[in-house]
Amino acid sequence: QFHMIKYEDLRWCESLGQGSFTRIFKGSKIDIRDGERHVTDVLLKELDANHKNCWESFFEAASLMSQISHKHLLLVYGINVMVQEFVKCGALDLFLKREGSVSVSWKLDVAKQLASALNFLEEKNITHGNICAKNLLLAREGDASQGSSPFIKLSDPGINVAMLVVLDRIPWVAPEVLEAPERLELECDKWSFGATLWELFNGGQAPLQGLDLERKLQFYETYKQLPSSEWTELADLISQCMNYQPAFRPSCRSIIRQLNSLITSDYVILHAAEPLPD
Ligand SMILES: N#Cc1ccc(Nc2nc(N)cc(-n3cnc(CCO)c3)n2)cc1
Image (cartoon, rainbow, N blue to C red):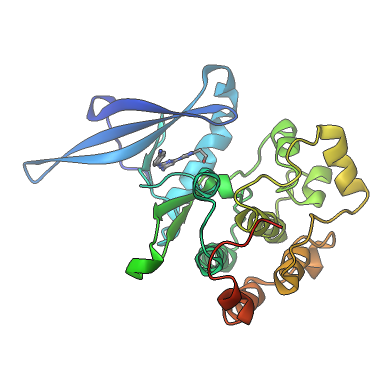
């Protein structure tokens, strides 16, 4: 399901940093279509040498994403190196840390786009497995004064990853996944959605930042919730998503309905600018 890209058609440009076991570079892809030469900006994501063994799950994740298409799902062109469409403004967590002054309605717009991507995956009974702000890419920054809204692309599914990586994903990964990492169900994405919503409303800060693995595991063992927002309706939605009983987590339709009522609440008007992170 991938059309082949030849190595000589790729150009590596500057390094954009590295994830846990990958390195990412800005690059360009050369296509010759009907005699014309087209150069496309791409993101080149390499699996680093000593993680070649994770190749099959890397491949499986990429091929899963290449079989479906949706406006809020990232386009993946190829696999030996994962060649992704280059998304203009990069990862959302870094953007929020840099910007820090986006409005509540901007955040709710992003949350709704993520919920619609999840709804699409839920309808296809596909679990993403790695929902977090780092994997939300900002294709358009959006500028309220120009009336343009943000536009996000969800990237990098995290299906069947090793336990070590699962532990590294607390508190985005649902508690039940620690018991059975191979049983990734749709409800797991609801839990991660809650944690991502928390990041969105806390300036891109990672939840449980700085806690060691021991304390992160205790967070689950003692059924803790993330520090709740002063906005009770938002805090309610986050804790519904992060319910320790998977079956009690809301459906995507319910999440979208609740986001719509948050958008119309007077809290948005009162907080048109960025309130201090609670
Ligand atoms: N300054 C800057 C800047 C950096 C990057 C992009 N573009 C882009 N496009 C993608 N397809 C994927 C990513 N990406 C970023 N971090 C990860 C790892 C976590 O997922 C993936 N970035 C645009 C601007």
